[in-house]
Image (cartoon, rainbow, N blue to C red; front, side):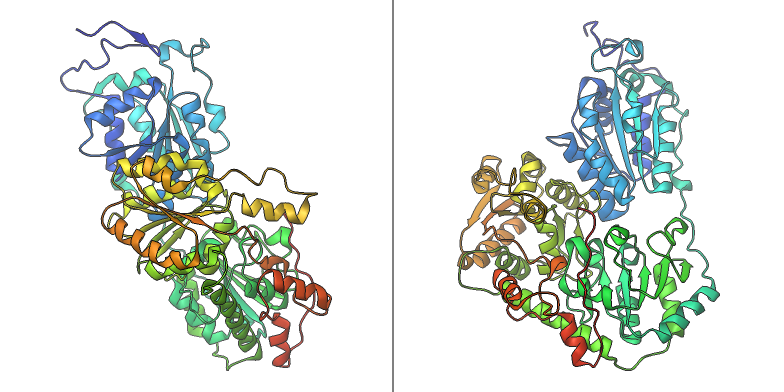
Length: 615
């Protein structure tokens, strides 16, 4: 006989009594999730969310609950799920702290415009507005992060509100938050008193291209002397037409950091990303370019870095009309799908013979690649992060998935991972929260169980969420976690070098991550030398294939990677002594400025310091 216990504003004795012809509102809600194809839901139970837990228990054969160690991890995993798959991610947290812990992941999803649903517990209706335990007005907490933010007020509306939340999240590519008083999930509603709109969900078809805009873009490109294509995540999946167009119009290709996995790393004209997570060829190209084809891109540093200040002509392609003209004055704005528009331009634009601009940029790219390859292939001296990447590249599978944490590892993975479009690379790119590596790896392995999944993290980022390594072990999610361990917040330390009086708060104690892994039931390895890196990573990759969760504790040096956004290579801007010191510090003796290659082709170079802006 159940005791008559009153908790969180409901009578526990009657919570699970069932009437014929009815369904619990919580169970109907979970069935709505299932109808939308939700396979996993992340969170931690609590008294104010327990009616949802009961519903998940009833539906346990149809939807998997993933018990994380921190609600932040659950929300970040849900966000990364949406980034990897395009499908809505779902997480939950109990009233008060459980819900507020999810905010980190909710903001990550908001900034990247991916669909996410957060279910937040609330005190039962009988205790609302009485200032009872963990009872508060939750709606304002989520007002900024959410495109849809509601508290359920009756059991009958509960599945309908959830259905509406999912539709809104998909339609507006954003975060939906629903607060659920715990007693409502246990209330009986008519069995046929709910429905799902999942089968009615439709996407707008691609906009019809305006041929006048295509013709205007072609006219500019035909006369451009120094064109560059700048591709964002809106071009994902369209790498071939972009490369074909670049070769046809002799325009090198820059890409945003978050779209770097869209292109094969060996494309001869791939400049990389400018500014914050940058590569040298991309930083140098924009001050010299006269025409930018800005496609599927919402580059967030455009204004603060004055990136396009020397550009004469700006052509933008975007499927979202709100993005057109947002980052720079446009000569031609094309509303449409990136691939459709690029194919239309490619069909009409003139093919250019080889140009000095094209050849100079190709040589500059080749010079940069020789530099990064030299670092990767070093076999003497202390272990640096570069040689760890070389070992990763040697065992990374053709369709490997990389969950990359935030910090130096974000920048260096873009420089040193040898990617192809079959692989995936995701991070917290715009919100840029440390700690995203482990949640992303958990999510990726759940979504793609047959693919090799990596988490690449600095020790600072790994420290944020390392408790959830246990989640990967508990759910048998064989993943390979590489910790670049140098006892510092490297990226922040680099910033302090540039702007502060000295270093403060950027160093911390060492942790033996291999022992930590073993304590959680994973396999732990430590790499101390260059000679060990390849053998250990090869063994780790095999252990993952054998079904193990593996952590590689790579004890690397703490020097700064070359700041490509702050180059000191140009003799007309810097003294010979300063250039020599810069090259020596970053092992860059053979690096040459773009101006060297331009002048070899008989072209003038603008000699100026690139503006940074922002931090």
